[in-house]
Amino acid sequence: MFVCPHCGANVIFDPGKQLLHCDYCGSDFSPNDAIQKDDAEENTYTESQASDTSETGYEEYTTTIYTCRECGGEILTHDNTVATFCSYCGASTILGSRVGKERAPEYIIPFKITKDQSAELYKNALKKALFAPQYMKEDTTIEKLRGIYMPYWIYDFKENRPATLRGQKDSRRGDYIIHSHYDISTNIDAEYNGLSYDASSQFSDTLSEAIAPFDFKEAVPFNTTYMSGFYADAADTDSRLYENQCRNIVTQEIYNQVCKDPAVRGIEVKKSTYTNLTPEKTETRFGYFPVWFLSVRHNDRISYAVVNGQTGEVATDVPIDYKKYILWSLAWAVPIFVLLSFIPILKPVYLLIISIILSVIGMVILCVQRNHIYIRENSLDDKGLMARQKKTEGNAAAAAYTEPIVQPKNTRDKSNDGSRSGGVIIGVVSVILGLFVGPLGAAVALLIVTPVIIALAADKSKKIVDTKPKVTAKAPGKEKFLLCLKPLIGVVVALLVWIIAPVADEYYYFASFSCIITLLVSIRDLIKGHNELATRKLPQFDKRGGDES
Image 1 (spheres, rainbow, N blue to C red):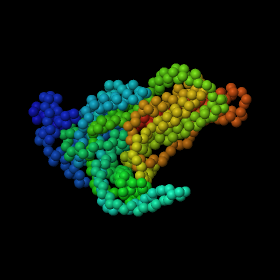
Image 2: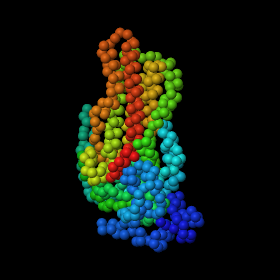
Image 3: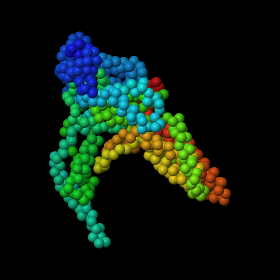
């Protein structure tokens, strides 16, 4: 631990001041002026005293390693900070501790966002989630925000060589379209430094990508004084794990820059020659980046919230409180009913057709969502965790990963929540239905349109790069069939009525009503699926029994 040079009390790093602060005498001073207190002696802090060179060739530093007895998760601390709960499974238990050596990073980005600021950012994110459970907003929950330095691999790429690409330009001359082909010769001189991916299998890839990027320009040489009052996570993934993924992103950026060059304006650069721009990695470094981490455990599920300790970017898992969902639905019922009661009624046969279309769309959404749940529950979207499991257990599920195809695509915001796109589709169609069927449509639209609100209220900070390796695994067909069974029954009833074509309109209304009711019942499955995607099963890091706690 580190002590104040004026009074000898313990000090911690203050992100707001970027200085070490002593609560006892109020002194502030530079991290380089700290005094390190060992159990045996006190010495002025120097980098050589904090680190040793291991047999592997990289430097190490002495740290206290806390291990959760329930899930096997580990966190590190350099001073006498006590760990009273596990950040990864949320267990409030006495964590086992030992003193050991960990690889020392070459760089560290100090925390800039304070705990109070991160708590406020987290609260603001939850304000947009109308159906967030109340337990996520309680002060006792937010108080568990913990500052953790996450390990990251830092990649540098450089390309300085001539390259030849193929291009095409189309023009019209009379009734003919002329395709002009070009050989584009250019000299690529590009350098990309500081591209980073988390090096911990305990830190979810989806969360780390959501709060990226970090500004590596603010990194400083590693100094353990910046860790005073904070924790750290250990690096346990191979530095080559994300190399191809990172190379594809750099290649894509080089391609985009070539396309923007005025010399090739109006010429479509062929994607088939895209690989000619692939750069070489020049260096891989190791660093600690700041993350405010919060785990919210509820029953046998856990949700996470993370805040970038440098930029303030927030990403959080937000499940839906079903009671709030029902109350909001009832609140929407009255105005929708009054509005649609003045609208003319649609012909029964058209109502039947629209009901069938709605149910089919609902079944497709449920199947797609079940695939996402299967991928999440088996950690197939977490490359770091899959690599760890493959190494320690020979997990065959890791084979579901395929290397990314090198194709130029733009990075875009994309939700990894299957219910959001589904809610939008169902909501739009149900509004159209409600506009034509009067009061009956009000009841239908009222509950189906609510997923649109869920979609808009859900966390939108998920950023997934298109060059990320694609996961092709699908959920078992039996699971998807059972999910679709309820709306399928309604569709079968509606199709039978449609085929028989009775004269009385009552049969059409009954079939449409049956179709819509079964779809509304399946909305509960949609919300349940959303919650499965927005929460996670309790982790097991090289331990058995974690899910049974």
